[in-house]
Image 1 (cartoon, rainbow, N blue to C red):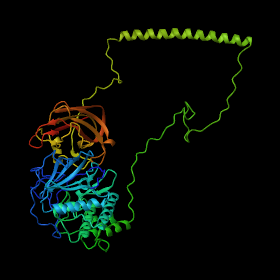
Image 2 (image 1 turned 180 degrees about the vertical axis):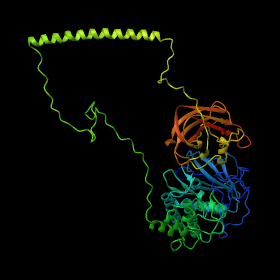
Image 3 (image 1 turned 45 degrees about the horizontal axis):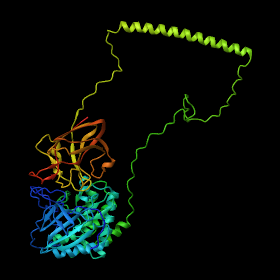
Image 4 (image 1 turned 90 degrees about the vertical axis):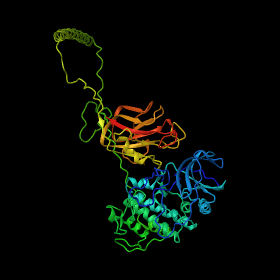
Length: 572
């Protein structure tokens, strides 16, 4: 199969499809149960009896470091589900990260997965995450696909809040056009969930798992175009309202109130774009009925794409720029040095230059010059005598008062010690779309040294190479001067590098390069103290880790390069 030189994306499409129930195991963003390391993913809502009844085979017993085809080195298992597993791997030939799906060759779905992967690879549409290889080898079937480090799942975007109208328009436009192109080639997705949609740093939306994700889970449909169209409508509905358009909660989103049915987006949240809300209702299974119009339902991605194209174009929001202070000319530049500027601004004036007087060349002139010189010498002598007398008098007064304490208002105040700053809340910062420990963030400022937030285990170090870094953004409640921090670490060592940045918000979409550095340091033990030369006023502080020590195995992670934070304190 022809290789494509592309970048990388998360291999797992598991954000939790089942309704949220009390006592259910909490899953990380990659769908791995934090209690038993099993996938927390479930099937899509079964509206058409789509799920095939199969007896799952045992997942291949592989481990980190195993190589496929002497080329793909497995690094981290992110999903185990229904007899297959998904891994983050390294293509050692092209030195790039890739994703790998693995299942036994005798698995009931092995043949359908191979066929789906090869069909998807032939499409070659850059709007989809590309399948790079699909092979049956040594009783294993594996599918290799792209890994996009700069992409963020729609799940993570919606966790922050609903999308702005222009962004929601781009989402439905790009996804519907891409799926229309796929259906023209006879390919369907059948698992268009928020975790299957990725937004790159350039604002483009990419779709992962075309045909393959459904084949891995045995999902089929007699009306694939209608199923994919309804899924796009659900994505648009969620993007506009931050609510899932069904009664059950899913993908970290709250469902609609029970018993009220499907209600228009503008009845769920104020300020929703009217045209986009009606478009979402036409795509969902509601026969096209909306609150204000009777339009035919969109039953195929092609019809939905045409309906989007027929809408008036939604312009992006105007960028907000802070006007620089008005440039002030100096009086020298204005040509009026030492003069006030008139109200109407500087006025150019043409002044006649008088010719210099002729030099004093006559005998009377010479006598006048000598007379002026004598007067100047006399004046200088008299001034020197008066100055000496004044200095002597001042010296006598100073000696009389040398034993009397004096206090002036110009004395510099004593430098105050930094005062503690309370942390109101914190959120994990993961611009690549793959968090480390979302539930552990509050443990870093709860005052309990036995609780902590932890990273995953990395096998290359001490510098973090797979990611740009790992971090947490803290909200201090209001803008404050931040000048120092104390960080308690779980694993001791001299390789934990931490940098504090001032940022404008808590979004993982804000790049580190746009933030202002406060201070940085590398630890030599399990405690790290940072003190900035100059305080920085900010409300949000990013704690950014770019290197970690090597530590042994414990109850939570395997041996490797890792770190955990037990306590964070700021001062200013």
